[in-house]
Image (cartoon, rainbow, N blue to C red; front, side, top):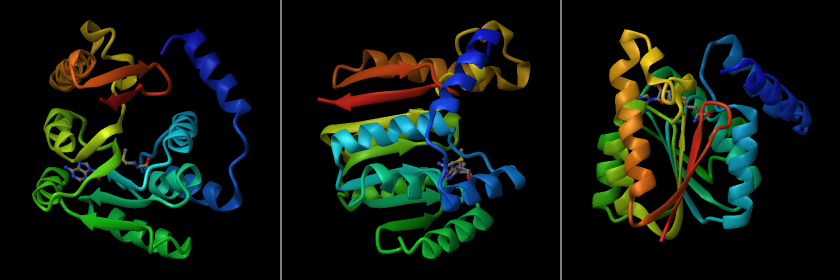
Length: 215
Ligand code: SAM
């Protein structure tokens, strides 16, 4: 990220409302334990979309410790959320945070590999008004194919990290170990932008968030 972008990011973050004590606890916990959670500006924007959309059912891919799932209820107070996490320690931490927030009647965490769990959800004909993808960036195309079966018409698909540390728009600078991932993300972005059933914008905020409306 260039210097100017860094300054803009800092400036925009300085304008965000301060985190409540309970939100700050999760943010500090994630930072202390090196758990990746969504950036605060992106979270704020997702909540704006949720306030407009007012979804009843949300599917999240990648729970980590439950931060974004819990915070999505700020935007969609009455929604039911299903969220998938494959890491056992994080899964248990998410369950414990969700219970502490007394939101276990609204948020169901499913342990397992996202593609497998999504396949089962699709087979049981589950439908969602919003799907938020935030796990295993190399698998986004697989997740998209499954998400497409479950997203209602008029639904919103949100994908985090689509610009992956700026490497997607300056792909030639990507270190060797990220080249395959960057290639997959570029293909994913192109697929989304050209998909006849979706209207997509990629927002160059934080790590890049795409917002897609399903016609
Ligand atoms: N959405 C969370 C938030 O903002 O609070 C952060 C999610 S974190 C960026 C991505 C999570 O996806 C990690 O906790 C990781 O263990 C999980 N993950 C990675 N690959 C996965 C897979 N194949 N199936 C399910 N979860 C996966």
